[in-house]
Image (cartoon, rainbow, N blue to C red; front, top):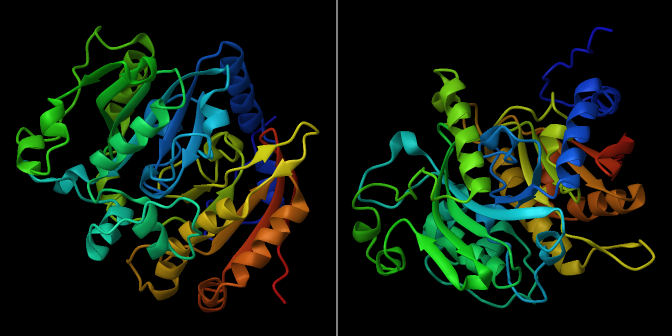
Length: 389
């Protein structure tokens, strides 16, 4: 039977999304993910929400990814209050990666990398950081001020990796993605709860406030050889093949972040394996992972703090979309997709988003739409356009 062709429209169609999730391609990718889960070889990839970085599948040419996404990969606390502790500790997880990103096509050797919007906002605000994870984040500016520790994406990735390694006895790698060509540069590997650490440069240079020392030879990178753990060597090998196959105009398309959709989802499986036509390419979806837990009876629990922080992250692209002119970031962002394991919960989150002035302004000025879905085990069981009037 011929595969259904799904148009890559800016405004998403509910009926086509449903068909896409049940298409042979989506079913095949879900099966591959489950097969990798059975071998306990899943790789947790905590990356930025940025649409140009994506969910990790395209970077590593590997569907066996658990995708966690937060602005600047900064939504990591360590300790018992860490939102994603249960994911890191899952038996099927082999290793964890934390990656910032930058625009390598405009990188200047000797200087810190630029290109991540969250870190750009951090530079505007300054180095003020409120380390108080119990406080709610009401806006993107609030999120940046309270959760992003460093304006440098590499140093932030290292902070997040150290916090992650403190709560899980599995290898954690910190590094950077060059979103202009998707190359992955690992800089630090932490193993045995921090008792074993390898870095591409000395710790003194890595932690120095003098970026000239850290970046004197460009972006530092661990050698690509058999001294890498097998899981990391395999990921890097796949990544090199991805980079070789990119079209010549890829870097140009990645200059401006302009996804058609902002997705807020509890599902830890990558968007690109659940909706492979809509989100199979980079720069299509700004992805926000909504943290949740389940009680012993299987009831889903999402804390107020998790909701506030997820909506605060959504404030960033939607506010930019509302103000954008042709050719500017988020100009074509017309959709919000909210996914949870319960349709009524997704509707409730849509209502909370529209209680925000910036949510209403985006909806009205961009003629946007909000789609709400119930997703269970990567399958979209219910999906509808949220009624806004």
